[in-house]
Length: 72
Image (cartoon, rainbow, N blue to C red; front, side, top):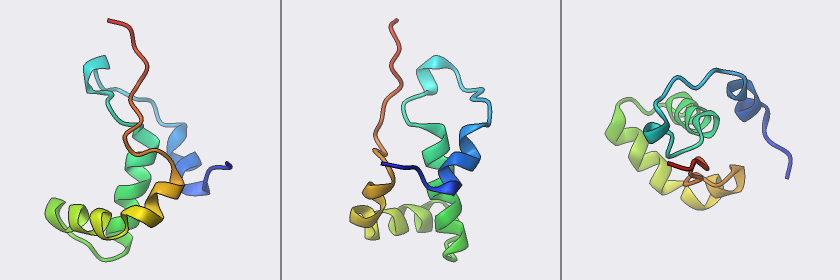
């Protein structure tokens, strides 16, 4: 599956989170948050509601629960 340009745009950003904080793919999260804000959602609750409402459509963008593969 090819990635969307918005996910690719965020893929080049350095991930400054601690290893323990890398539960989700940063580029995908930033892309989803950006799409939610562009759709007119403001605030965490509105963004969360939007993500739930469009869950099935958004899953095609990638696995939102993709965990970082790290060995502790």
